[in-house]
Amino acid sequence: MINNIQELRERLFASEIVKNEQDLQGCTSEGIAYIESKYGVLPRTYREILGLLGHSGGKLVSRSEFEFYFDQIIKMNEWRRESLLESIAEGDECTTLPDNAFCICARNGDPWFIIADGQDDCSVYFLHDDCITIKEASKSVMDWIKGFVEDAEYWIRKGLR
Image 1 (cartoon, rainbow, N blue to C red):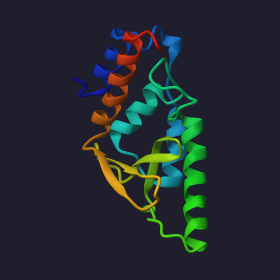
Image 2 (cartoon, rainbow, N blue to C red; image 1 turned 30 degrees about the vertical axis):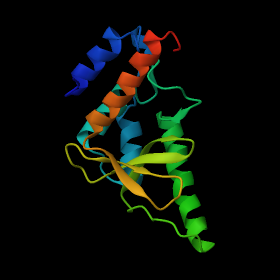
Image 3 (cartoon, rainbow, N blue to C red; image 1 turned 90 degrees about the vertical axis):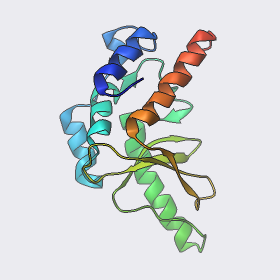
Image 4 (tube, helix red, strand yellow; image 1 turned 135 degrees about the vertical axis):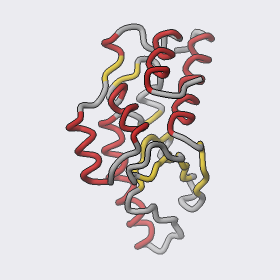
């Protein structure tokens, strides 16, 4: 079980998702402050995750499969907002995200997002490719990241990561 950032760190090393300190590169407080200045105060749990592995998390996720790390999520958040506004302007039926929504990851352009309202933890939501359907993907950010850890452990055991 992963209940806090220390347990996440320990599990990353124990499962060999992260082999050494160089594999694990977190965001600086300045990088996190940059995000918060644009999108709102991030939940504490997500700030801690960014501080631990915001730039690199070893074998946690593939950069080619997921937009997950700091540089990717910055671009994705800018693109997602522009894309939604363009779709709405063109008359497409799209769900607009709240102003304080922050996309924390995407796969094939479909984002997971949180609400940046300064809470301790929060739900993670998923916007499906139909641009309309939003579903709760996880009750908490820690549960959401645990899913990525479990997937990485599975693929490592299979020898595919």
